[in-house]
Length: 259
Image 1 (cartoon, rainbow, N blue to C red):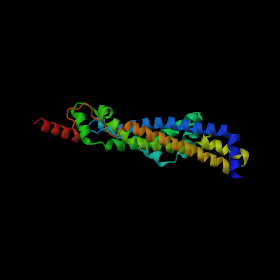
Image 2: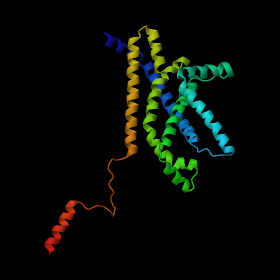
Image 3: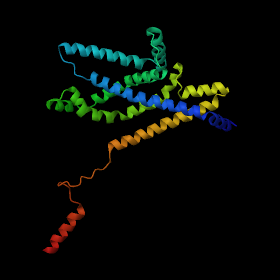
Image 4: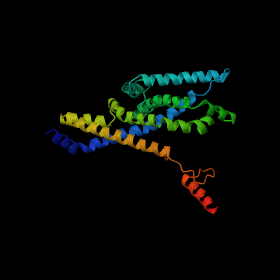
């Protein structure tokens, strides 16, 4: 009976479920990309070496202080509260009427950026200091070193963590229902309210969330394997190739036969 009811709810409301899942994916993809860019920028700025004296020292300390406050605030408060403050607060305090979908992307992006900045900073710190010294010896400044030497390695190293943030964003978009964003949770709640049936719609929502997160995880793992390249490399054409034992044995036998 329950399976029949779940099937009935799905058949009657599948367009609403589909629109909600599509909006969830749309917000998650855009916000993860923007949040990763924010995290990259903040992570690079926070790893700039602070000089011992001068105006630059004071400026970097102020910037690092502001960025630290941003990171601590958005990592230390729930996204649901952030959504309420940014969406409703911007209208009440500043008279700014913000589009709810723009607000949703903004909220998830800056929240993701706060987490990604620490992931990026950890990735940069994990790179051997000798690479920084070698780049500086070649005349590169901090940003050139980051672009040409460090970031290609960091991006590969933080790719699993970035994938985790993407999966988290797919699930955390459910809190955006507080600002009436029609994502999957909002659509499911609306269907349950219209039909006065709660269990089947949320079972369907669970399945849809699982399908989205599982698919994204598998795609990201495949992407990681593509970046890693083949496990075995054939150094064809190398003059320093080691002769195979069979070839050496055949050569020895030929020399003996000639004698």
